[in-house]
Length: 190
Image (tube, rainbow, N blue to C red):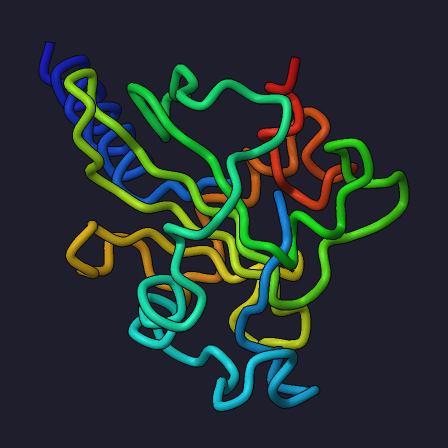
């Protein structure tokens, strides 16, 4: 009985931790550059080294409100166990420009500066979390070429780029993830 209770508690704790720390995942736009290349396309931008710098990019420099919805996917999707209950996925202009007919061409990757932006939405339509993929292949904090982060709408860090996508990459590698540069929303297109 005692070991069963402990197993239930531990399972619940791991599920909660996984949900709280999970990360999510195209059109194109200008975003901060990778550290190895200097400013990519926006004058005055610098490499992303902190969560605050990434949130500033999303909120001010390349504001997510200007992003395009993920092509050929519903505007609001049923969420996943880590990104739910519903989500809306968009991308900046740089990411969008990498697509051909709404798909990432076989054998290609998103260019540095691409942003995949997922809003986690409640059943009542309130956005609770921003899950962000920011392409910066040369960044020391990148995993699989992306910075992985989550923020509240106010900018509070829910999952730091310092974690290097540790709880994100296994799910994003599953299915067609690796084929689609770790962006699983392609699997939800119609």
